[in-house]
Amino acid sequence: MRLAVLLQRGHLGAVAAVIAIACHHAPTQSAAPTASASVSVRERGPAPGGSLGDPEEDWSHELQERRRMLCDPALRRRLQIAIGRLYEIPPGSEIENVEHPIAYAYTALLRWDRGDAAGSDLAIDRLPSDVTDSVGARPSPGASQLPRLLSLIFRAGLSYGGQSCPAPVAEGADTWCGIFDAHPAEALQAFASHGGSVVDGYSGAQKTYCAQRLIRDFGSPKLASDFASAVSRLDLAIEQVAARPSGSAYSTIHVQIDDLVAQPIFGVSHGLRSNPQKRRAAIQDARKFIRDLDARLASFRQMEEVTASDLGRVYCAMAKHRGRPSAAEACRNDAEARLEEGLEIWLAASPYASLHVADGGALHEPQPLK
Image (cartoon, rainbow, N blue to C red; front, side, top):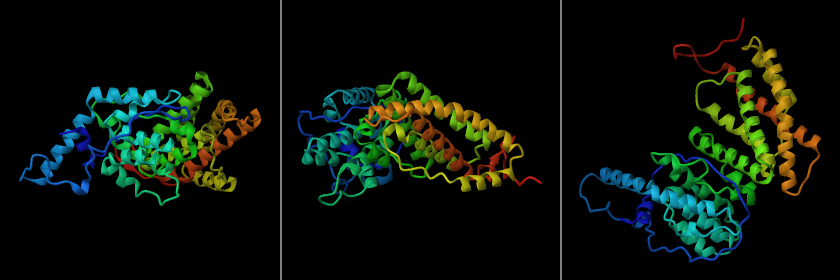
């Protein structure tokens, strides 16, 4: 059975790996994607082989076969090489000849970007139904196709990326992060937090990695390293103020905080929501549970002093790259405000009053101090 036919069965869900960064799209010339291997889910008959046995067993066998074929080392290597060629100017076209859901999604974007709507639609038709169904119907005539195309890329990577295979691929090998440079606002929306730890873990990793690559490519390797260290210090510092509770919801909150810190790198900002009064109220509530809160906050401020300076330099470098140079003081102030809001977001979620794992593995709910 051809791989492209297997892909149309579409209900494989698994998490992908991480990312890379980008150049703007430019026209390329290559043959249009064919639809000969495309089979609609609604047009399928029985499972392969015409088995009269248990349909669930037939379906499971086909899923396993598709997974095996998608994880073939030669196919994955070909996909990764083709994605690497997308960083060239103009982007390489090898991706359009690779039979893999991630390749189909990027082909749809590249075709649309060149004004080839028919070729873009043919590439979308080759995507598994679980990818297209999760994104929704085609926009009405006259509406931009870009948000949907980027969402298809996100969903294809989420379900069919490297971590769905037994051996994880190299970091960033499955993702072309040119989308975050050429279409930052739309790409960030496609990779937005969804409130689920698995999905948000994947999308958060993509954005963090892409931010680092963007800084490295358009700033310097040193600035990229400074940014990675700054994010790590922030994540650690907020948990030193109030320890992470049990449950996956707080992983999603970390993603939201990291997103807030990375916004200026992508050249977009949805505005800070920092509210000093709300922050004071959260701190007062935390005092009911954390005896040495003042000492913990003092430690956070020490981290903030160093981290705001590092982030400020990164923000200024990326602002210059995007043709919007900013004064060093303004960049640092922006960084400090984002660090403060990150702390506010964390405390507002009341981690100090949620279930924690005690010594021995038992769960316990902290009680207010007496």
